[in-house]
Figure 1 (cartoon, helix red, strand yellow):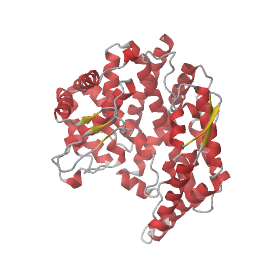
Figure 2: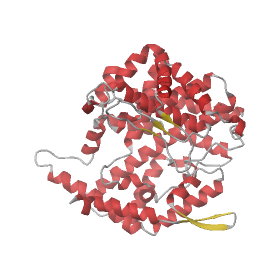
Figure 3: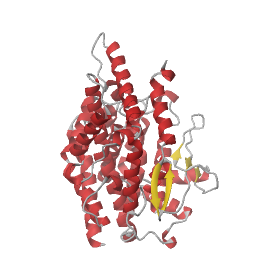
Figure 4: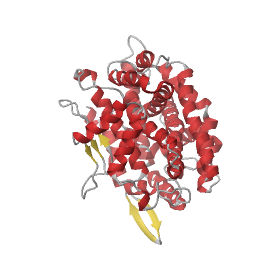
Length: 446
């Protein structure tokens, strides 16, 4: 019955999103844009344009708020009813499936969220610095994907762009700074022609590493343009490929790992590149790299926990009542106030409608694994900083065990930490706090 009942609500949302049009005026010309086109403008240098697009997108969603609210209520209601029917022997909580699929205990996520909440002043400082860099008074919803301003960036000239061979060499050196074998892995990918990075007509956008079970290889697919963010994307995807390669002699059933640990190797790849660049005293990349670090940290450590808190509130209230669009707006505003506080003057009451993750029919609480992955990778990176190349064998073994251990067992075995306690998460958060301090120095010295 799922295609005609449960999945139908996602299909309805998807169809609404496909046909939604956002009215935007650029250079005195008004156009109706699809959501994908509008989203691209949210990363534009023009802050006024970003604000206009964000406001217009919310107005477009308001037209469909009754339909979208009906779908969100129905998805939550079906899951809650199913849990009730499966509670004959013991009560089944609405978070049980999400934690099971993620391979984590409830205590682990509670500890992680608590640390994120305890350290909100640090995240709010990052938001204030981003606003300062833009010459604004506050960090706003339309600034979530704001690029480093051209007044700060020295990466706009074509001469600053790296050729693909130069980018590969940079990533190789960054990976080798951890261990020679990791740098050699980049050469292996090149020799096996496992990196498709050309920009070609008709080539679809995006970047990913795709694993093939029979060969055990994981080619990287991207369109390389030479910008710094593309070099980070290359490091990110090669991290994914290393994860796959490290497991290719294991039984197939042991190569499937949950979202919580899926971004470990990719995030570590980016962190190695960031650390290597900072060590090279490349002043022209410092501010751009730090800007990206701030935006990533704010997203993972503020916006993702906000989504988790909102979804919890939705399910708790849905047990007793149907939530109207106004109810959903109120709950989203509460979550915004809790996590963004005074750091964001304008709140986003329509985020419950515009964020498609809330409307997936195949998975609930889709978002918290991203915060987990970011902080878990930060904890792994702290071990790299502490132990250097001596940690590499343990790192590879950690990756190999991601498909056959819970997150707690994985961390206990390879990192010697207890994920159900706040200590590990605080240590991981401290890495972001140091990045905030580094960004402030770079911003003041620019």
